[in-house]
Image: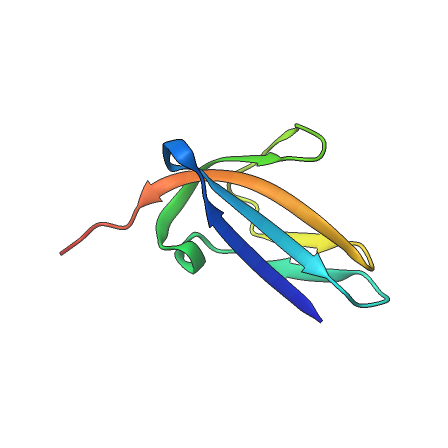
Length: 79
């Protein structure tokens, strides 16, 4: 099984954890709308500190592992 956890952070960023509890790698899709954003403007791998392309939407999570991201984005427009 896989899970996606979200935690709002101070300053408007979000921590997103992509969990893979399976014995094989899994590709997990993450869209800005999944967390109420119009778009991602910045994304960083928390473990490595590497800035990622905010347009990337699919992440391969190794077996029995987690990918931890910090993201920023533009709020959805209200009508």
